[in-house]
Length: 315
Image (cartoon, rainbow, N blue to C red; front, side, top):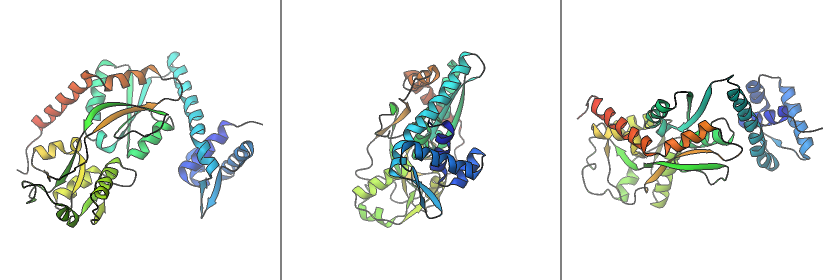
């Protein structure tokens, strides 16, 4: 016998869903067929790849070690299928992008528009999630290119810097400390800190700052940048957030920034793609374009146009 695609797909679906039931729903098959496929995979490998955890299932150490290889096999076969159909002109050329929420809500749409203007034969799709979700999409070959902040230390991912990523500590526009001198640590600890969900790169930035400053403030977790901006505007708390996500609000006085010492260092936005297997021409073309002066000029002009046309409120 040998390892089959059904076994690999069933195992990966169990990994994603955490149960046989979730895997069966995802694959639109019966639960016994999923259980049988995972059991057969374990026999082929000579060691269990999953184990019971309460009412769910978790991967064993062997399962965790095997999962990236299984994802690469499935992903590369799908890439090969797409490449073959594109070569035979049986399918549209598609580029699957994934972006972290902050990037998707700011500069990624104009970046896509600029790329499409000179590559109109390539269709674009965009998936949005937090850092962890977006990286998983690329590593599992379910997205061709990811756009996000700090890249992982993983040889399976190539990261190309495309734009600066500065962070600003946002607060309500009427905050009395916004126009003053540097805010001290005691004042920051008295504030409520607005946090993104676990797995978010923005959350990591805030957690690292608080840990470095030895601050233990009250926190409030919100599920999106939009919710954090509205909460900060209403005076519910403060948060470090990428300047790209709040540039318009700061410019129009809907939010203010607090001056702080030792704020997070300037970082970069990256375009990331898998290094495993052949790279399609569309992926290579987008990676090159995203880091080009043409892309930066398009983003700069798009930001200026948005600021010029947006109505001024709240001053």
